Image (tube, rainbow, N blue to C red; front, side, top):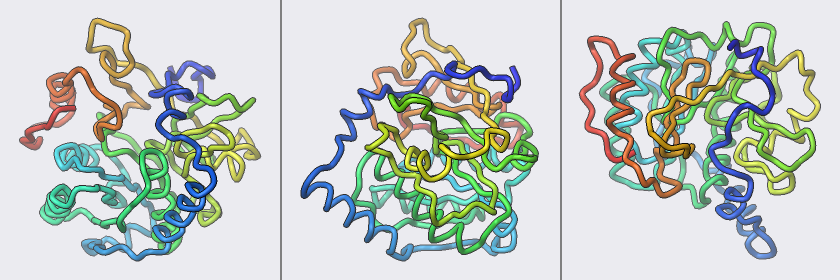
Length: 304
């Protein structure tokens, strides 16, 4: 099924609205003030480490930003497959939101050895969806706005291209492209999942909000509903196609399936934001090796 032909509502969310709200209780009173203060400080703090490996010129053409979180094993495979298949590979850059010092050091060392641009994000004192959303806001406001690329976008650390792909080709004539999520009680509401979303560089970057929207009951990325998605011309939007890839015998979204998003393999839950009862390393490695080619990395995976 072509991405443009995908019917609305077929994509299965990775988390229900009720589950998301249990993990991300809307801050109120002092908690709300603390949330805004922490976000304010985070967004205005300079990155402690920025190593661009001489790629500044490429970053003015395209930025494909991945947000790393405590998984150097996952990032190593993503680097390999991005370089093998992504046309905009020179614009790929790792932004490290890890909360473990040893993992940050391992990811930084990996990027240094692979000559991949690396930015260590400031200490992030937010949690779950707010942490990831504000990490993207930091990147948009402090990095994308600086380079002003022709196109830019974000991918999760646990999503991998498995065949030749070009974001620029997918965005021909479009202002935004990505995987739609409609798991919200807001009538007509939708947002692009921030693990696979791309934008024309002419959009007002500093106005975008990739944080969760407590008002509209939307996960990370939902903050863009009132400032962009709600009013955008549908002709300027391209939604990615999505299909489930079964590897288990049951019908649990997390235990028995991976997802293919326009040919990108998404594993989900590599950050262990929810308890994973089944270790999916074997199935993941088998799929990655099918796409990895003769020079694929020898990586020992932690549980996933």
